[in-house]
Length: 232
Image: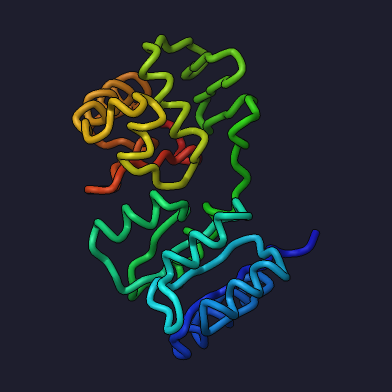
């Protein structure tokens, strides 16, 4: 099986010199572009498995590049940016980015985010069982959740929130994405709903709700579900 192809769209030459050998050393295939126009052309001609995208490009804003990629591709896009304010992260994630790394970042964190983004996730139109290590199982077809072989009863809203997170396994789900998907248009802005129902899920599904391993808070942005965290 060929190794995943990663496209880097980044105008900082020094960062490209760091990224290319870092990724190549992990046996990834790598392409790089220094401008938005070049990056969009490469994305269309090579259809990479993942894109690392800088927001501060010289010829086009990175958000516009993200929009262009999302117009035809659902492949993972991880944002690399010096813009580290929460509103920039939320905007990028809401527009379809899979993750966001603020500069500067280390190689270990970058590689971990890439592994998560590349991991196979459940297509939105397919229902199939998902299994946590440690005996945590969610059957999306039967709408059934069990922990250690014991069925866990969830309310309709709890289940819908859990399902929305499962379908984004390992990715950040923003407040607005979850509110729109679980509560619909009328739920916009009601982030207290999420806090309440996330607390309920943690009480039912985490070994220690005060130190969650699966349901991770991304402060001021949203939540991330970690399916791979072992259940004690």
